[in-house]
Length: 451
Image 1: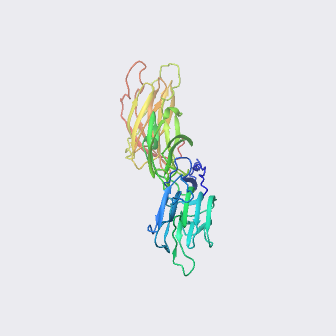
Image 2: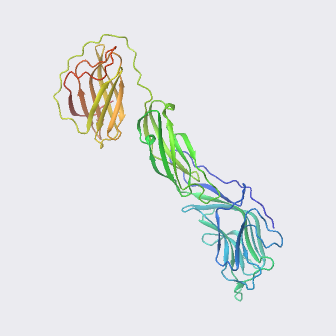
Image 3: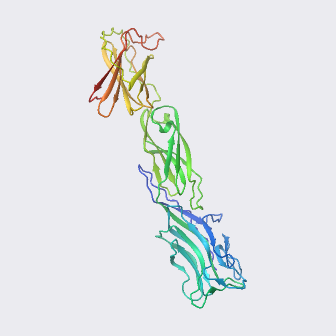
């Protein structure tokens, strides 16, 4: 009997890398097929009458004339028995796709053989239907052997089996051989193509990498995923481009070749990114190449201090007197906690009710060379906290700090006004505001605020 190993490389079809997941990928599972070693981890034996039928696994070996042994994944009648095989005795090997997946193709090297009436060697789908040309249904001796490929399948399992099914009404059993088998099936090699239309799942993301908001230095995060055919890799995208990928160990001799779940940690060196906003996305990819992307996370890289404009040294004019506004009731939803001054920057920290989400805008009004100026910065609220550093030119006299939050339709604004000489002396080491006058706060609605 001819015995050939199919030179089939395990098929992996990568899913598209796009802004949305691409599903219905395929992958191939090999059994007793190249590349070596020739192993079977996907077809399972079955036998409802081991007294009369036997199964064996001999990947890589071939039957020789007159030998009682069988090659590949085989089933046959037991030799030298005193009685015949009863009707309904069945044995063989079955491949079952992972739950939710289907088998769409198979390439095989097989042998279906009988030399006595009543035996039915065949390859059947999950509903019991034989594949075209894969059953010895005619009377007399039969042998179907060699290589074959079947495509356009849509079944959850395939089985190569030997069944005792007597046809004539006066026969109720099948003969058993001596010294050769009267019937046998052999699967010398097979590659099954599985179609996976189920997207992998991202079960969670955690860490600073996926929290969002201002970041600097090296930030890390963890991506957890799961899939019915297994997670093949986890990915990190920055601004839509693949930044990092971690491959998991997969075995494409198993029906579900990759780990059912995974946990992968990523690190991002923000020094490789320009200062400013960037978009982060996590992704997991299953055995068929299907990819699922997590929702985008917005980060703001702040690795360097703001650029300070170069101005000639001047003697600042005293600030114009400011009449304090009538103290109002401070908002419980938005507060300025501290304002401190370094040599050329103003550091502002505050808090907000946790029901407020999104961003706040800090506006600093200052006087330089007798002229009024302002600088502003928008930062993200993170768990009810916010902080910002705003660059100021040398010699600037700070007059007022305002913090603005934009709600569904309006801006809620709270202003903190401080009077006096609010400038860090050129030669001193003093930090912070000189608190020479009263501090007042007010709450007001500002509509149609434009940054």
